[in-house]
Every structure is written in structure tokens, then in C-alpha cells.
Length: 630
Image 1: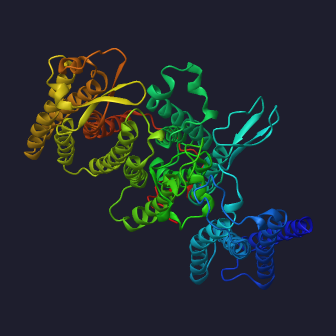
Image 2 (image 1 turned 90 degrees about the horizontal axis):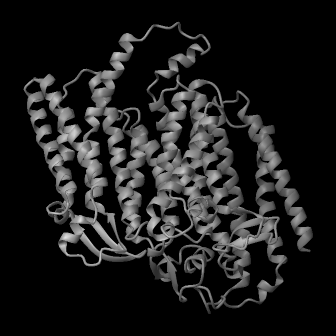
Image 3 (image 1 turned 30 degrees about the horizontal axis):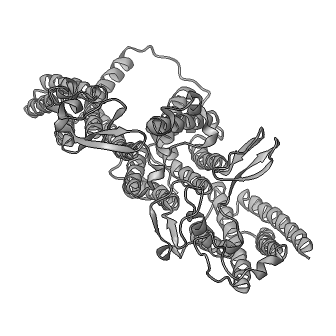
């Protein structure tokens, strides 16, 4: 019976997908500006019915194939719901009802998503209907998915499978932290989700490049380079942040064992963006880079949200242990997975880890629409090209700054999790720096007053001088044992820390030179004032360099720490953020130098004939400052 049901369901599903896809294709490639005509509508409706009913029957076949489920009256003892009753009839009914709703809403979501990008001619009424169906189907699909999958919770084994092994001695499915792969090829769901997220970024970005430049495929090689740079950066960031915990006393080859896990989004996104921008500059020199990053960078949030689903299967990105009672609105299978203790055991019944992976995934999706709609569209009057990309760093930095203190200590980066928090704050400062650079660049191009340049340098230098009041150095022993935390001023004014004292003096000179520069520029003595601004920037860079390199155990030993052997010293919040602020105070000078060099280059370069290989419409679009919006 279950086999017959499954075969019939698959026939309906395949037929529905073909019919629905054919109807979408016909309608997208016609010049019809209103609703689909009768013939296309028949294909679309038949496809929707086939997909929905077929998926419902697939779920029915799954229940029929497991008659033992009907005998299960209580949850298993080693789960978060141990001893709680299970209602088989209710679970079956909900699974069938909401699987139908999910398939219908999911098909509407992807169908209208396809039309949104492919349909070029539409009257306003039809376009509004497409938007309503597209955005309305998203919450319906998510809610119905959670409801129908909730019915399967009592019948699953935990932890859930996290991948599979092809060939070798032990082929088949594996769970998180199962390392008996033998000599087979291990395929992790985490990797599949990461690759799928990259494709989503590519599809959306490629569409907007097609609308602006008139051809597909401009991002093919750029996407590959950016992806590879992102993987390298994610691993480098993880190894650096967790060096003392995992790699200090291990075989050096473990640094490259990416298949065992260990990627951090903060490093991956930063390296990927830098690699992609460089590749775009070299491979597509005619493309407006600032317009391009405003389109591409926000889509990274979607890739991050999809990648976090892979973290769920890997039993990672967990929060602190809490009671399950406040989280029962989530699917039972998700909560049961959250009852895992780092994938190697179970918490006590009724306890789960806070699902940080889910919170971050939701905030990433919200951030994607916030960047495109609020920053990209509603703030169009005030923003500059590149601001949307800068706002990405600020958004994600804020999200991670909020989440890091809630992280389970087993997933901390570094000995006291300072590495993750510092990186989160660095993201905010990087985003702010990007926005400042673009605004200052355009400000000078418009030949306006230079007052903002020394003022910004002064502001960041002034704030940086207060950072040493925070914890600036951490003394640790072993992998997690924190011996002591020290404020920056304890180190700076120690007789054994001349490098840190020199860094503080240079920071103070940065502030003094910035004040003098601001006064001179305000009195219209811009030429002399700019030289003082250059001096403040040199002092800022020297101070930042010394803060990252000069801090050691000299100051600590003067304070009285005994037995300095086997003690590690790690930069903490104060010195690290101070160095970042001083580096940002250099940005106004960097913009001035860039504009000067650009002006010099354009005045002395030889004029070359204009290439006729680019269409006129494409040439005009290069200078178009309007950013497309969802």
C-alpha cells in the first residue's frame, strides 16, 4: 500500500512540476501585461494541484511505511520531551494538512520569485499581485513547514543525520561528530547549504547585472573567486581565533582539516567581499564597483541564513542551556536536536540550548530586506553608492555583538570569547568606515569644505583614548583557564611596557594634531591644516601597530604575576578596539590621498580611443547611480 501511494505521489509531483514550470515559462516569455491567459492558467493551476496533492501523498506514504509509529505512546527517554505523550492520529492529520499548505505556498513562492525576475512587461495591478503573492507566501510557507514537520518529531532519532559517506568501508548516513568515515567521501549537509547559499547570491546578483548591463554571466568567475576567498578567510579566521584552544599543541596539518568543521562567517564574508571586489575590478573594469557591491553584498545575508541551517545539522552555534518551556512554539524535532550536548550526548529532560543558529538566520533575512528596502530605497535621498554595502557590515556586526554573550562556552572563539566579540565590533567599525570613505570621497569631489576630514579624525582619536579603561589584556593558562584580566592603563603605565606607553603617546599626538588641523582648516588655512592631518594619521597608524604588536608579558610581570611560563597573553576589548578606532581615524587622510592620486592619474594618462565593444545603453548605464530594489 505504501509503495503504491509513493509511486502515485511521485507521478503527481513530477507532472505538477512540469506543468507548473511550463505555465510559468510561457507566461514569462509572452508580452501579456495582465493575468495569464486561459491556456497558461490551466497549466499553472494543474501544476499547483499536482505539486500539493503529490507532496501530501508522499507524507502519507511515509506514515504508511512506518506502522510502528502508531504504537509509540510516549517520547523516548533520552530526549528533551522524555515521558510526554504522543498522539499519532493528531500528528498524521497535521502532517497531511500542513504538508499540502506548505507545498502550495512554496510553489507560489518560487513561481512568483521567478516571474518577479523574468517578467519584463507588467501592468501595475498585475505587478502588485505578484508582489503580494511573493511576499505573502514566505510567512505561509515557513509557518506551514514548521507545523507539518512538527508531527515527525517523536519518531526521529537524535542527533539528526548531518551528512553521508559515499564508498569506502562505511558508506551511508552519519551524524554530527561521527568520524568513522573510513576511506569514503564524506558529504556534509553544512557544505551543501553553503554552496546553495552562494548560488542564491549569484542568481539574485546576476539578475540585477543583467537588467543594468544587458547580459548574464558577468559574475561567473567573480563568484567563484569570491567563494574560494571566503572559504579561505573563514578557515583562517577560525584557526587564528581558536589557535590556543585547538591548534597550539596539535599537528599543524589540522589547520587545513576543513572537512572536520571550523569555519567562521565573519572571516569568510570579509575575505570573500575583498576577493570579489578585486576580481571584479580586474575582470569587469567597466562595471561601477560601488553600484555592484550595493547589489551583491546584501545578498550575503541570505547565504549566511542558509548556511546557519547547516550549523543546525552539525549541532553547533548553540546558546546557553535554558528550559524548553519558553520555546515550545518551535517544532519538536528542532527542540529535540537542541537537547544535544555538543552532539555527543543529551542534556537533562526539559533543557535545551538556545537556538542561536535560528535567531541569526532570521535576523539575516530581516537584514537583507532592511538593507534593500530601508537603506536602499527609503534613504535614497541621503545615501551614496556603497552605503548599502557598508550598512551590511554594521547590521551583521550588531547582530553578532548581541548574540556572542549568549553563546555556549563550548563554542567560544578564543579563550574568553573576546575574539568573536572584537570581530563583531570590528564589523561595525568597518561598515562605518566604508560609509565614511564614500561620503568623504563624494564630498571632496563636489569641492566642498574640508572641515569634516579633521573633525572625523579628531572624533575617533578622542574616543579611542577612553578604551584602555576597559579590559585590554587577558592572561590565560591552558586552553580556558583565565588567570587575570587587566585594564589597558595598568599596562600602559607599567615600567615594563614601553611599547604600549609609546602607543598611547602616539594616540594622544593623533588627537592633538587633529585639533590643530581642524582649527587651521576652519580658519581657511587648508594647506597647512592638511599637513597636520597627515601627521595625525601617521601617529594613528603607528599607535595601532604598536597596540597589536608591542603588548606582551612585560607589563604583566611588573604587576606581580608569578610563574610566567605556560601563560598566554591575549589582546582583549580595550586595546583591540582602540587600535581599530585609530585605524579608522586614518580614513579621511586615505580619502584625500586617493583623490589626489586619482586626479594626478587622470591629468597625466594618455587618452585612448573609446572601445566600441560595449553597447551604447551599457555605456550610459555605467554612470547610472540608481540602485535596483526588491
